[in-house]
Image (cartoon, rainbow, N blue to C red; front, side, top):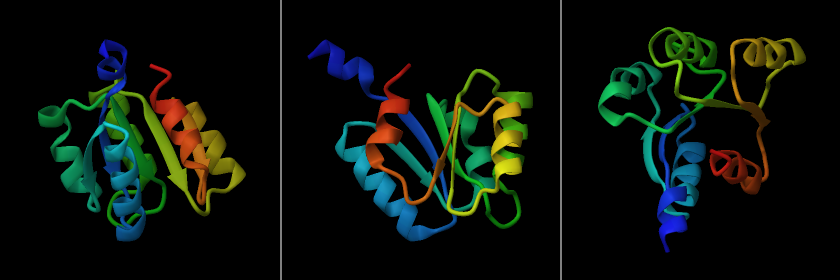
Length: 123
């Protein structure tokens, strides 16, 4: 049972699409992870220190601050926290930019949930 406890992660989930946010929260929560869902990236970034997540999972296209804004903030203030970028419309140049900024993976929506969970459990 100890191994299962070690696999549980604190996940900061950012997506302005409520349906995606709810579905991923339910899925990841059912797998035992502690999920902190935010539809507002500004509020999410204000809570990073308090939450101290193991992973940041963020959408690319959002109002106010996009996924690149989240990644840049992470790079300057929380470089130890790995990021997974999710998007339904990422172009090849955006994927390359995300990888050059240190994103662990880019998942195109819709994606197989097992791809996300296997990434989270790598650590």
